[in-house]
Length: 362
Image (cartoon, rainbow, N blue to C red; front, side):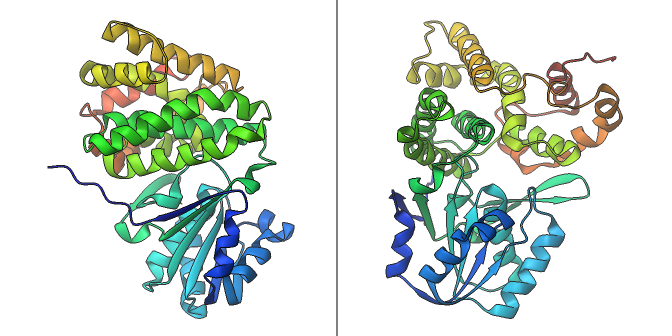
């Protein structure tokens, strides 16, 4: 039996944030970072959304459990009718966790300003605690409303387009082979992958006309993985990100080709189908899988992303010293539960060394 549900209403297009003006709440708490607070966009949207508002602008990259707890106290103190998350994955994850830990049930709205995490439609929130990233998973975390406003994407830095873009690709690739995948998640993941794969170079090159399509692809990939599942690419990315504080999408870019090689032993047919749907040739299954890996490697290079952990700034000594907690945290990550191949400590360690860039004994 296969199920699919998405309670999130999605409003998309140029100026989509103005939808809030016609659906004002009484009290609004807007959760964001210092950038959007200082820029003035946070106050603009908060005033549009509510008769009375406060702004919680303390979100930092990789929000901590302690920050979410502090934010939950702010939610309980202000008693908002609506919580609006504005920003990338970190503000959205933090806002979702704040509402969850507060025990209250305000309307939850997400306005992503990057095209990657898909947190605007998922049951996930990623929090950092004691040098490890911990996924919080609950249907209560899924926003009621997602606003995909292409006007907010005009000034994205190239590095952020690349990092977030590979997060979309990793979401789609892992969702397509996730243990809970079904026809609907497959369709969403396949379309999201094909769109992001074909349009990311143009977006990275400065073409704003493709950014809404990539933005929507990020949302579709997230809808797919939220129910189809993720896998060891994300489990390792969470673990390595907690240890070395590297961007999540950048780690996915480093890990994804190696993970495809491991999972192809039982998911080769689905990988081959995904490759062909994206216009990556290969008549035989093994050839299509190889071409998929090579295409991702070429795209990674075109987007200026590192190919190895060493190139990303991880030293051999640090990797060697932290290998045991890295593998242990990855194995404990719930993303492992839906990987098509049952992960083992040895498998995960071999992947890390494969992408290390300096050899197992360095």
